[in-house]
Image (cartoon, rainbow, N blue to C red; front, top):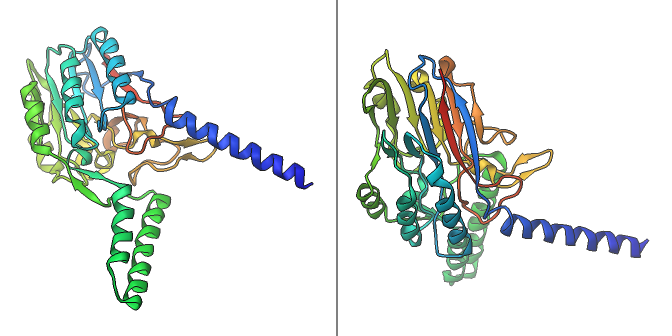
Length: 328
């Protein structure tokens, strides 16, 4: 019996190691193209193609980053979009700024322009390493043994609360280190990417089709109601927002199509259980990305699985870029 149990334990350990290795190195360098035919409520924009890119999470140079940029260089020229929408989290940290520039150089021509909104990581990096290091340093810095125990208890509560938030599928924010948002904005401006900060515009030559973008829900200052109020009631509206929770705000009732990211599709999707965490509060673990038609007044939403990760694992949830064809 002991020999049998030992073999089972070894088998489980090997399976776990293989799964972890696959999640770290096999799915992450993939890049899929996911296509959606979408009909806007007022029929505006029929025949247009939108290229939707999200959540690159560029950080330090490594083989994954180089592989993704190489694949994008091969894929993007043949897609021929009329409009390009980028829904944030270009950065994981500042060491990814050169990769952001490399991506912008790869973007194909788009007659109606390229537009972006910023995500929470474009403002700050959330670092598990810093989170745990700060806790241990706080404990070590306390000289009084009694106060050291009190500090340890406080830090353990903070650790437990973070994991409880993940379990509850809450929004999480921890150990935020500021990123160089100003330099990112300068790069986007240099490459003619228009950042829509709580702003709505009519697309060139298309007064019946408007595009709006709002600031990030977690790190920014979104003004959804004020942005949508600027859009004529007779026009169709496409909204760019990094965080999909904003699509369920009552102020979004006039939006035809929301393009979003942020969830990464959950990154790790377990059989029978769904995503470990969706980084939001409104999307379920079983449906953390893809197409949604449950918005107010018949609005639709597409949430991209994104092109990168916040933690270096993907399981049953490969990276993607999205193509949207507007149909009559």
